[in-house]
Figure (cartoon, rainbow, N blue to C red):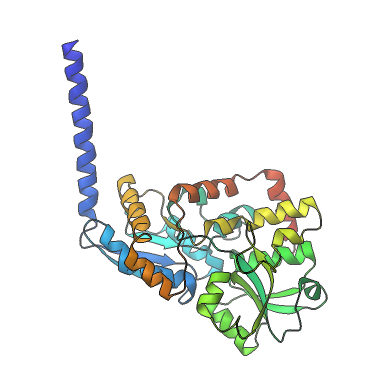
Length: 340
């Protein structure tokens, strides 16, 4: 019995020593390193601005105090950056990414250009959730969804994998709206400029980004909100219907609920599959710590961004629920997107 107890004690000590050595190695790894945040949406806009703030605060919670920079990689409706993170980015913890929240949904509904499995990423969490809105320029001649069923208007988009394109595509098919989708813009900021120039008349995007990037648009009534996408109506937008509330039957409602699922992800952050677990843990802890740091929160307020962190575990669960959604609902949603 003494020998067995001694053996067990030695085994426990060995495991603890190995764990401590692994953690210490992870701590040493980030010293003198540069961590790159890949931003899938292009320069400017809320994703880019939040990432820039994190570069100034997240490193102080990472052992070794590495440097951190943002590199924008727009293209393919955010698929380009996602594929890069899955297949090309180093799997050592030196690359993390903020990607459009529609990426898991694009995987199951369209799949165009997809060379990733969203359920296999190491998710770090999200700064918070927000509703998206569909809105038109004030002189477009459209004030309601009913108007949009009668009059065609142009809508700017990046690529088919982006939520700002998925939402109007599904609205056209299910609700008989008449968005004429113009693809090819490299970033949401380019679409905003195009709206001001009269090149396009509408877009979809987060309500918080709209208020942060263009604080004059709503007070000066430069845009009209037609619908919002999310689980519940945004505070202050109680008069704007949810996409699911526009459904004409239960089947449409289920499809629109699946399509609205990315909203729960907010602006998620990830690192590639294959990164050592101890480094993933360090990055997750640093990400969440930065989002609780008073200095970071003050800077987020200056860019008019409310922070309500979502944990890595919750993000991973939402992604799995989307990727593993009931096949009949996925097929109905796919059918709603056919020939668009």
